[in-house]
Length: 199
Image 1 (cartoon, rainbow, N blue to C red):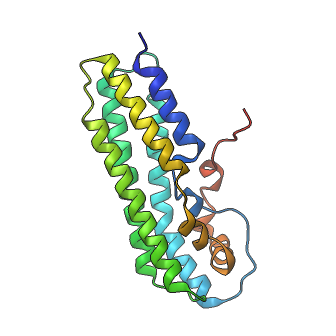
Image 2 (cartoon, helix red, strand yellow; image 1 turned 180 degrees about the vertical axis):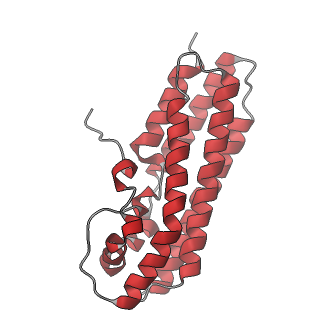
């Protein structure tokens, strides 16, 4: 009988392969934009987003750690539930941070901001739904629990493949260059990069 271990490993693998959306906000490299207003806007966003990115990394790490062969369904459920709640809260806070920063001082800044906020709130809601799914799993029956986790992993995989067009747009052009200059948007880049897919 398949236990929960292979399934939670699948969940961890999906997370590490890039399902943790929005971590792209922790960008690497240096831009050369010199617009003070834009740099100020980028600093505000990056400073507010950084703690949330760390929260998402920690939640991801917690799921990764809960993959040992002797993990009990109750422990897996508790860990995954808290991780998804933390991710949901973090994406909501990211959306609030972008909203609070106002429109980036670029052409179409209003749409760029509102689209990114809407996308971040939508991702937050999706992780909230995953938490509810995990909470509803039957931990008394290991095979049912493993099947339920498979469903969660499937939803997570869909979430990772859904387009992040608004976030991509937020991080492109002059806005992206300004964000790349901010230390708080660079600091967790090493651990935030998705795992290489050429295994």
